[in-house]
Amino acid sequence: MQVETLILGAGAAGMMCAAHAGPGTLVIDHARAPGEKIRISGGGRCNFTNLDCSPAQFHGTNPHFAKSALARYTQWDFISLVSEHGLAWHEKTLGQLFLDDKATGLVDLLRGLMARAGAELRLETALVDLTHDGTRFHATLETRGHRETVEARRLVVATGGKSIPKMGATGLAYEIARQFGHALVPPRPALVPLTFPENRFAPLAGVSLPVRAAAGGHGFDEAMLFTHRGLSGPAILQISSFWSEGQPIAIDLAPGTDLLARLRAERQTAGRKKMGTALATHLPARLAQYLAESMTLKGNLADQPDSRLQPLCRTFHDWNLTPSGTEGWRTAEVTAGGVSTNGISAQTMMSKTLPGLYFIGECLDVTGWLGGYNFQWAWSSAMAAARALTDS
Image 1 (cartoon, helix red, strand yellow):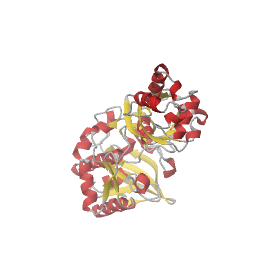
Image 2 (cartoon, one colour):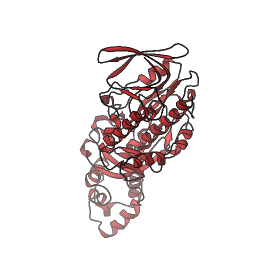
Image 3 (tube, one colour):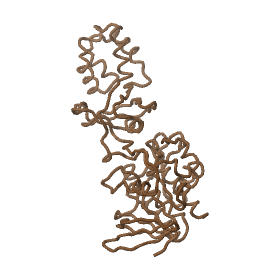
Image 4 (cartoon, one colour):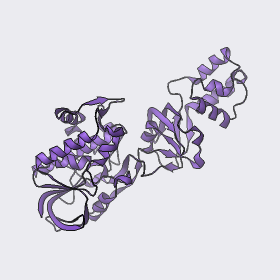
């Protein structure tokens, strides 16, 4: 069988590319259903983009790589697409856009666009072997025990990263990249909860509060959640992308609040309060009690001179903790690192060394913030490749 374009992966990027890549396109995926990450994201409503999307919310070894694709297919373009096809959406917080109804509506939309474009979709199909003869790709595919060789003039790798292996995530993109001489930036879990030894925060599991979390020179003002294994919540997921093993993170437990001034004032009016009780006025009660006990804060608020309150409040505004690790690929929302962008055209997503080979979406060394940015990278990088495919 001969096709013009073979796309590996029927996720967000692969389906978007197939819907615009022109005739003679075949999409394969080893899963039973396409767009699984779309389906489960955002609690089943899919946080499909962000109103504030710009290159500033993306990082990788080359921070400039994403600029071209993001500029040529923006969040407004994708918003127009879903709106034109009758999918209602709403903004939650921080520019995050979610569908009003189930995310399967977006999967159906992409499948419909693929069908209209004449793209064929094969599910439960695995790539068994892949070669290139100098002109065309030769892919041996296996579908439910039946093998077939497909020849393709162009190959698009859209198999994603290694995050959420229970959905079938693999390192296939990295194997293909290595096969054809592309370098890798070591993949690692990103947008992932952080863990601490000996279940340090297990007594606080379920406690949540707004914080400012910082790591690797980046800080985020969002919610933090204590878990049996460590810390989670949007603020922690955000900084996990910038945290390096062995390095501390800094947590401001009361951002925008002058705790010292408040405790001084309260000392004058309610000095008989125990320290744990006084802290509970400004922090969740369980957290306040935990901190009071772990820091051995004895006595009443009236017993605390400024010389003791000052360092105490500095600690609350700059609580330094060193995680032991992350929860890993199992719960990571995305993959940081991946196929090095040094060998990829920022305009077309095509390999600089092997014409006709493209890499799009999460498999590349481009990672967005939490909040719809990584889906926008899927749409934008897919469109960059699709436009190049139709022009070639």
